[in-house]
Length: 131
Image 1 (tube, helix red, strand yellow):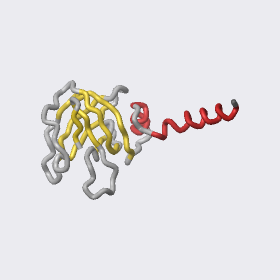
Image 2 (tube, one colour):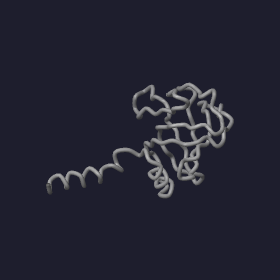
Image 3 (cartoon, one colour):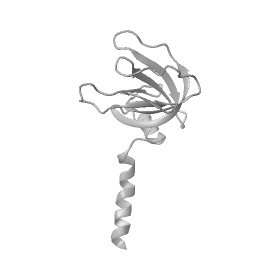
Image 4 (cartoon, one colour):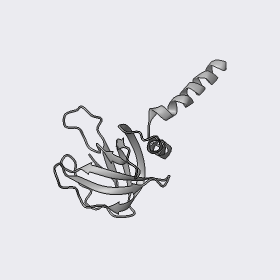
């Protein structure tokens, strides 16, 4: 019985490190000014920005996370398809790399790495995966 309890405690203590999927981990990353973190989550589109077409092209939009934190998504549309039907109020799931900034952070690497040196990311919108 004691062995099972120890295993359970060990498992529960590892849960936060297994995935950065929950909103509280993103909020913590923002508060601690952390960057270069693989994160997963869901947000609601609160603003769609003009695509950045200088150099590598990026579709840009801002998500509001359940915590209230905002997150700028910079989705590389030279390497991945653009979400053409994206609109304010839509829900977007994401997996990518978080970079801190004072406005909430930036999410990038939401695509496959053609050189296989970085973890592949993705966006999900209306049942379709973009990577």
